Image 1 (cartoon, helix red, strand yellow):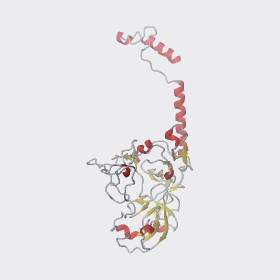
Image 2 (tube, one colour; image 1 turned 180 degrees about the vertical axis):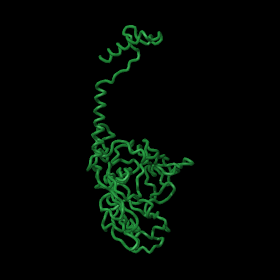
Image 3 (tube, helix red, strand yellow; image 1 turned 60 degrees about the vertical axis):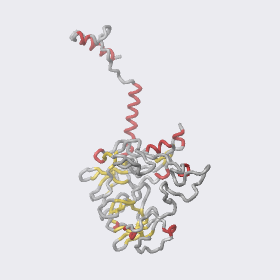
Image 4 (cartoon, helix red, strand yellow; image 1 turned 90 degrees about the horizontal axis):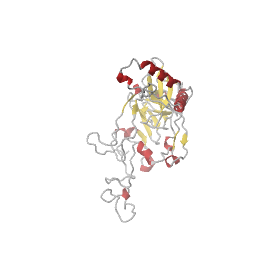
Length: 362
């Protein structure tokens, strides 16, 4: 009412000084403009205020000292069939806002197609339904000055969570893989004489045996290449003159040079493999197209297709191009890195010898 009265008084005071064209925009009765600027409804304003308070509370919880990325699971109330079986990782302790703009860049999704011809190169893929930004994660860990963990964030380009760190010397920001046991407010560092704590990076030569590692380099200075997925870790078994023996998540035992960097701890989000998307649309969100079994196709479309009624294919499982898909060895015989593998992941299944002589048959 006060706003309405103020507008009426302003219109009456300004009407004599206006031109006839401008005066025609005012109503004759109250001499006020036909175009009203409506004030926000009290209920809408209160809802907006409550929403802002909730967002601020989430941000405060994500940046509070001692916060860790929650690895629990979240079950939804089945208000509709799409949520009845949905079972995902709880992300309520992660940062709810946008990532740091300077640490992101545009990513173009090819949808499993060739960038030149547009032909399908990976079956069952499509472009994701949501726009994404690539987070520039530091896999090299070359800076040796200490940094403080500010918060944990969700990364749509990988299964693990990432941590935003701020270096104490120049307040520069960076992203690293978030290991389990790391908390907001902790200090992480890289170097030869840093403590053995989750998130610290150091050469394999100074790490004690039996330590769980992740983000392991294969060549010094090239950045971490192995053990970067959610919940994974490698165990340092022993060290020799030039190499260290690592037992990977797949039970493969591999040699890595002792001067390569590795990060202490296990990668976060260990419950990633337990998630259930709950509906077909959720698979399409992440770029997965439906799969059709070969035995359900026609004979002209697949080697296992055709036949009267429901047939099993009439032979061993094969790909659409006739390759056998079960039991055949797919590793290159003359792979240069074969001499660094002490024990293959499928060692017993292939019936290999216990001594790697560096030959191509290994």
